[in-house]
Structure formats: C-alpha cells, structure tokens
Length: 420
Ligand code: MEV
Image (cartoon, rainbow, N blue to C red; front, side, top):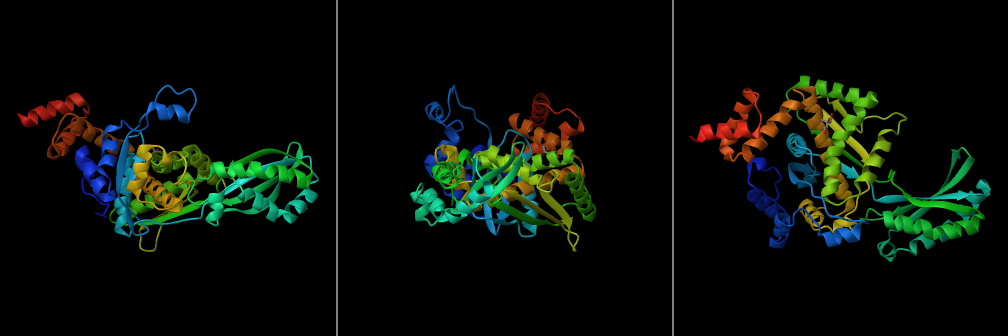
C-alpha cells in the first residue's frame, strides 16, 4: 500500500491503525510489537546513560497524520504531541492540499555553520592571514571526520566577519560544513575546537567560543501548496484567510501565535523522529525576525483562479543518522514509517506538516473559530472512551453538542439509551 489517504483512520481501533501503518511501511512483527508494548520508548537504563541525574522516563502520545502527498510521494507522518486536534488538523490540511497535487517542497543541502570567536588581534591582518591559510584550516577541520571526508562532505569554506560589541569590533571566523544526513552539532563543534589552536597560531590572537550556530540559514526548506477554493468553502474563505495572514505578518502578538501553530506540526514530527527541537525552534524564531521585525513564517495569497496558495520557508537542521534517532526504538520506527532516505527529505516532510497545520488553524480561525472543532473532537474521543461503536459515534457527538453537555458521563448515558 502506498496511498496515505486513509478513510476514517481516526475511527479505527488501535489494532487496525497499526495494521495499516505496518502495511504502509513494511514494519516487521517485532517493530509492531515495540509500538504496542514498549510503553513509549526507552528503558531506564538507556535514559540513565543519556542524561544526568535520571529518575525515570516520560512518554507522550504518538499519532499518525494521513493524506500527505509531498513532491508526488505519499507519506504517513508520525507526530508526538500532547495537544488534541493537531494531528486531525494536519491530516485535514494534507487532504485539502492533495486535491491540487499536494505539497511541493525543496530543501537546501545540509550545511552547518561553526563559529570561532577571536580576540586580541589586529582584525584586518588576522583576516588576511586566515584567508591565506584557508586550505590548511579546512584540511585540519576535515581530519576530524573520516566519515564526512570519505563522502566528499565536511568543511568546505572558512570565512571571517566582524561584529560591533560593547568592547569594540570583534572577529568571528565561520566554518561552513556539509554534514550530509546528520544534524551535525557534534562534528561541527569538534571541527571548531580542532582548528582553534591553528587560528591562534596564524593570527597571534586568542580564541574564546568555538561552537555550532543553531541559526542554520544554509539549511532552508521551502514548501508551497495550492488549496482548492471550493474545498475550503469558497472564495470568501480564501479572502479571509489572506486577511488573517496579513494580521499575523504585521503584528508580533499574532505572529507568535500563528508561528506556534506551524511549530505544532514541525515539532511533533521532530519529537517523533528524535530531533533537537530546541534548535529548530530557536532558528525558526530568528528567521521569523530576519526583516528586523518578527513576522509570519508562512505566506498566504490568492492566485488568479481564486484558489489559496500557501508557502512556508524556514531553516531546518535535522538528521537521519546519529543522535537519538539511532538509539530510541520508537524514533527509529517513526523514521521507517516516514520512509525518508535523506535529512533533506525529512526537512521537506516537516515543512509540509507545518504548512498543513498552519492552513487548518487559520482556516478554522477565519471561519467558525477553533473551539467548535476542538469540542467536536473532544466529544468524539469521549464517545469512543465510553465504548461506542464507530457507527454510533456521530450520533453521540451530535446529541452532546446539541445539549451542550460534553462529558464522559453524558457519552455513557447517551450510549446506554442508544443500546437499550
Ligand atoms: C494552537 O495550538 C495553535 C493556534 O493558536 C495557531 C493559530 O492561532 O494560528 C490555533
């Protein structure tokens, strides 16, 4: 099975959902067993090796967003998130985008930036010396990673910039490193530390900080999708969504909330695949401020046919090798469910998920508001928890909403009446 648009996935039992996902991603019996019985992940022994002062582990819900078509390939998207409605919203956004061909996404190659702060130097002379010795600096950096060197990746460029500080001008050297399919923090830090004695020797200065920059502007992903005007409620809704975007793009208070909705999608996939979500958030927020004002990360316009066109552009530093994605059993399975074969492809999926999420949030906000949908979903979950059969759920939800009584007891009462 390679079609990700699965009808009524949310109404299926856990077993049925697992069978579908297992079939889609060719999961083995052992992998299905891990999903079903490992209580969400790692043993305490593993946790104790990962962090300091461990006292336990902490699990969160893992769900699957359906209907994603990205660059003509179908994806089931694993999402780890505690917030209700997010996975439904992503799936809904993907379903509508699919009508006009799905998401088109492109992602830069994975260049990470390492920074070295150099003090106590004649800056102009130091820059000249660094430029003269750049081949040696790059070779020394690359001697720290056989793996990247063998793949013709690794450090590619060394550049210098000056910054103004309270203590006058300061020299910052930057290493540009092709980290391939890794997130690359470790290798970048290692290379920065390795070249700093050479930089001190060449410049006669003193190096202070030697660290990766999480502002990964050489790892930009850009997604676009067309949303059919008829499927989203007509041209009036398209116009209102464009106006909603204008609000977000021009008011920081709204922009933060709007971008938070985008991050609902991106971080949920980051969590499922074991990425460094703090790095992703920090870079995204800096990117939202790149014009000098904090703005929307996405853009929404109406095309000449009256359809809605959304785009989302942001830096995404992610990896499919190294990191906890290789250690955490569920993250490994999530990676398999995604069927991504490169870090760039993972960045594409995450960007499409962010755009789908943003579409659904601003569509709901520009029409009926988000509370109605939230309550409907909440009522569905309660009806299912009360033991309703799939064919009974709509009826129970309808009665609870009509009577404005949404609770487990009410769901049980309605179910009892339906059954008797
Ligand atoms: C809630 O988690 C996210 C939203 O607030 C996003 C938005 O307002 O665009 C619904």
